[in-house]
Image 1 (cartoon, helix red, strand yellow):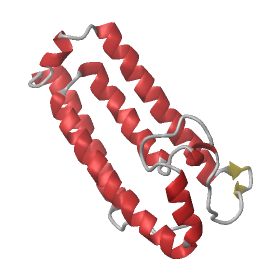
Image 2 (tube, helix red, strand yellow; image 1 turned 30 degrees about the vertical axis):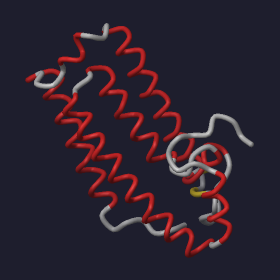
Image 3 (cartoon, helix red, strand yellow; image 1 turned 180 degrees about the vertical axis):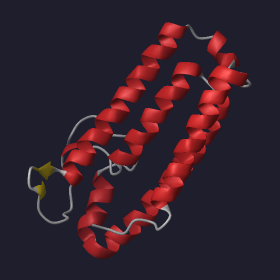
Length: 161
């Protein structure tokens, strides 16, 4: 419904590639910053990694279905403001899901270098979300401002009001 930053898709691809390359090389080849992995047992790291990965997939899948829901004949309806489902818990579930997905990789190996790239990804997503929200306020006005007041930007609300 609102505008996406012109560099959004390209920058996401670059950040994703950078994260995966840094994570893979640091976790399995050079092991430059994985010293913390020796302090936390593998099963604990894998549990939290899989949990974060799974919650991330959940947020992405639910938000994709809400926004891009399709039938056998194509997209359902015109673009509309969505404030239900995962969008009632957090304003940017696709971005959050992507971040949690990647955080799962970090948690499994505790590569500090990949965490630094992840923080860059978080900052990027926050800037993109802010850009998109400005346009949504322009388009939807008070309706979106009320939504911003009721629904957190990044930390999901566990219960609906």
